[in-house]
Image (tube, rainbow, N blue to C red):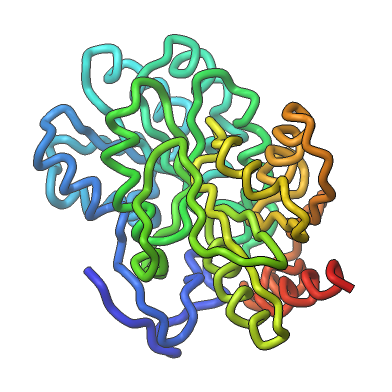
Length: 331
């Protein structure tokens, strides 16, 4: 379902604040609708939530398949333990909660009940990074850093509704556990304007450019594309490489773009510690690529509460800040 966000609909200070800009093309609840489409074809797909179905778009699945939906209440460890048991019987569970609860409260259950036996459980985490203004208790700014060290776990950081819709069936088909950083509600639709198809484990060069290469994941790919357009007015030609899969990481594609004389910048909606920047940096070191990389990322700190546009400007995730970072790097 595609629509356009009007200024009055773009909530900026609520728990489930939208990242869509006024007038931007969006799709409503792409995860929920993609999961329903998958479940209509695959009777083994089930959904579980820890009292957050409405706020993770799992309610779309719940309303369509109530007999295949399980509400465990505010008990994230039970959520993942139950999903592990279902996966052992041949079901394909998708479980939804906030990223902070999956990463901080239920890590051991995901690690030992699901990842160690390599079960097909798909964890969908709402409010990743700085996508809520409710402060450190709900801002999962370090979720990828926590999860990158877990063996067998695939990590996906989608840019928009296209990524999410195409990722869901591929996550279900993957042999082991997955973690999806969910964008929910009215999610921007961006990648349909590029010759792009989501492929699990692969990065994609969305546009070429001779002066700068921006390597991005998640909603920051949307910002990277906007920044590339803005930088054209400064006579700066910018390439954008989208890396929706953080683990396993497509080092071959990324390093081929990195190993040039262009200015290289990574962009992520995550702390500078343990996310995309350090993934790219470690891949470069292992491959013997000597290259300076400038990070655009959240600081290694507990963030403030407030309205999302204000916070994104404060912490350098907005387009103007990205443009300024690039121009400074070129100076």
